[in-house]
Length: 422
Image (tube, rainbow, N blue to C red):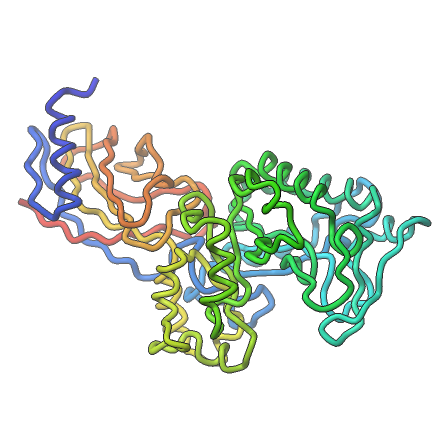
């Protein structure tokens, strides 16, 4: 049972964590000296390279990205073959990284969609070939009930198998070109080449209920009322999905892109991740987006803080920046923990910790003393906030770490600390 003096002391500590005033010593507890630095990109954050990038065997990143095809997993109705996907996840984990994955049906220039073959062979299923981005491209037939049924079944199966898999950090999903929620150029027909708003609403609700742990995100382009039901069904915005921006930091990012972020709510990062990909609008964007002096009047570090970015795909960046710059840019994203105070008694410790990063951690992580975890998770510790935790472990020389079950072998959550004994 906690005693009254403990509550009083914790109140003092919390106030001190926020004001940098000295902490009043708790009876029968002593300050534990602690020195630690964050030396690498933290798990589930940073600049992201593709799984196919030959430069991905580096600790300058913690995440790898891959497109995936529905037709590679399912060829016959109800028969799922995850073997190639498993190989991909194992390969990423072997490099002490985690995966960001996105399944898609349409890719510009593909004359065959990634709809499973058994659906494409149905007599009343009719895909559309049209010119998109200057190339003939195949679009699914979203009128067909079997495609709709399959799509919902696919994500139920994916959630059942991979919702808690530590090899996957984030899931992206969507429709249209590259599953990025648009058909800017080409045969755009809602209900045929792009799913109806009614079906999308059903899909969003399924995703919200099926995934309890794995954060899933859609493109900021889903703010466009021409494609989606969000404008007519504003309650859908409250579902637990994150956002990705596939043209981050282009010259006019303050216009349409920022308006799309605003549509979904700029505080969305408090519950779901914000990410994206560096702009390919011009070669200049790719060449200079990580310049330390920035481009278009902005630096990546400032924009990462502005949009509370946890990750950003930058597959071409090794062509233009050294890996140290990529590492440093990655360390400006996501969460960042700092131990503000650490006190221990015979069998109890109190640890005060701050999140000095730009986003929360989106998986449960726990302050741990001598192998004993705090009851509360760091998942609720928002950027710029601090909190104190009581842990049922202590002693003369306690050891402190941050544990998270959603890591692959070789990963570790680091923290800053500069605590001296009194």
